[in-house]
Structure formats: structure tokens, C-alpha cells
Image 1 (cartoon, rainbow, N blue to C red):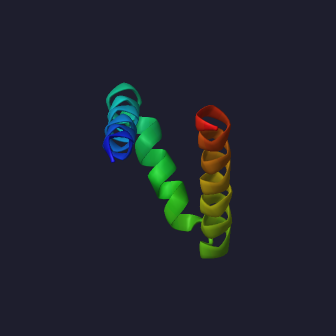
Image 2: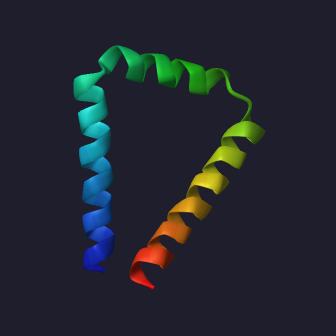
Image 3: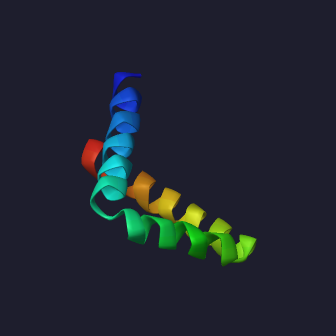
Length: 61
């Protein structure tokens, strides 16, 4: 459970750094996401989740 909480904290840190360092690019990325079709976002989300699971599986074994 602690690993999950640490992972959420890491996500928040990375997102916060992105918004702090590149606010214009972050706004532009969000506007682009609004224009992207749902099926593309779904595919990218599933792909990202699978890559994340693979990385965790490789690291944690």
C-alpha cells in the first residue's frame, strides 16, 4: 500500500513540475487533448497503462 501512495506522490510531483516549468506547453497540450477523438485517447491510455505494468513487472519481478 505504501508503494501505491508513493507512486501517487511521484505522479503529482511530475505533473506539478511540468505545469511550473512549462505552463504554456501544458495549456497547449490540454487544448490538443480536447480535440483528440475518444478512441485515440483510450488507445493511448491503455498503451500507457500496459507499458507501466511492464516496467513495474520488470523492476519488481
